[in-house]
Length: 141
Image 1: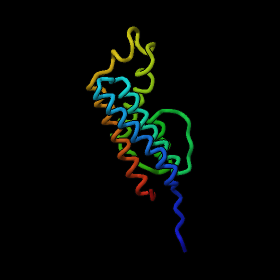
Image 2: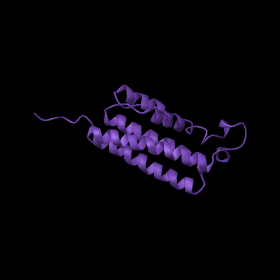
Image 3: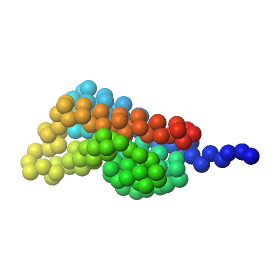
Image 4: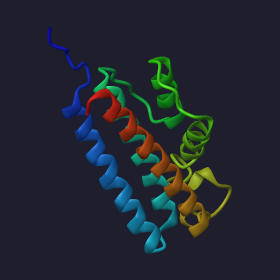
């Protein structure tokens, strides 16, 4: 009897590769002092990795909330740690205010994000990507 692998490795890898590329771009932005974009791209990298994992398991979801995507994976029986859930929630804060001037009472987003904030966002994104890759490997990627 053969075992059927239900994890779509090819679809996961498409999204995983984009997540890695986006995280590397975020790191370059942070290095160059473009902290708002680094934070936004860190959120995007986490989102891509989690969407890739969900797609690997045959689930297609719309939306951009890293926290929601982690919740959907938890509903599949996966167990993101409380620390990972905190990282996901932190990343969600970078989705809108990093890009839209009306997210603040005055000024523009680039005036509100610092090197420290970008480092935090990158750390959270790495946590999400590391966990995602670990789960995908266990699933057969």
